[in-house]
Image (cartoon, rainbow, N blue to C red):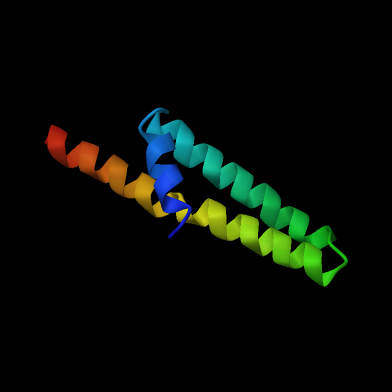
Length: 72
């Protein structure tokens, strides 16, 4: 919930389609990088990053949905 507020601020300044795509690419990169970590602390750090990136996804999708509904 903490990371949803900065995500909402960022999505209003960027194109939502680029923002969601960027989040998905970075999320996938962090997830793939998780396979290479060797310590418990590194896994916790990766999980934290995944949570922070995932927090921006739902507000972004809702923002795009709201834009589409207003156009219709």
